[in-house]
Length: 112
Length: 111
Image (cartoon, rainbow over the protein chains, first blue to last red):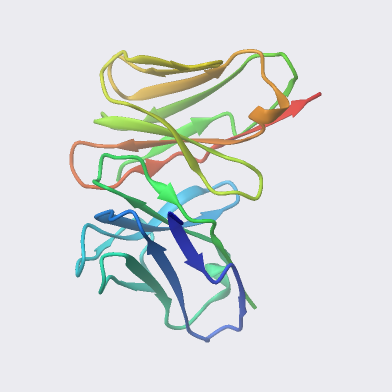
């Protein structure tokens, strides 16, 4: 039982490049979330999903897209990376919206 | 939009001293969760409070939810070096599915 797995763990991009972060959970959770964590800012919700095939915007969705084609996977895409997107990205999942969230180990992304 | 403020941002204590972090919301919350993140790690769920005035304890940790359900606190008695990390509150309103995280309190325990 791996819980929530994020890949990759580290990545360096150049401005304008694109990439996809993958999140996988094996707990049969309905809800999945993508957060970014910046110093002094706490965790800010980018997008989330309430079930397979659904996505919704969070607090800071601009510059990101997401997809949830399978219940266990939630993908975060950066179409044209910008230095302001340098951050640590965490994926989380929960059974329902009012339940505890289980976090992955994070992806440290640097954009030059 | 909903905001959850958390103070202090940093706290340094001598081992054995007590520690408290406070969380305040601009709106009434349906429930609040607390998480701990060790340095270099990911947030780990500690507890959830739902009822007005609720108090829950986990060993040396005491969690409170305010009567108006707009504030919460986490108190650690007699801190230990294992308590080091950042403590986050996360509040959810009565509309919407998302929790809003506070900015966190980073606790350093000096041996």
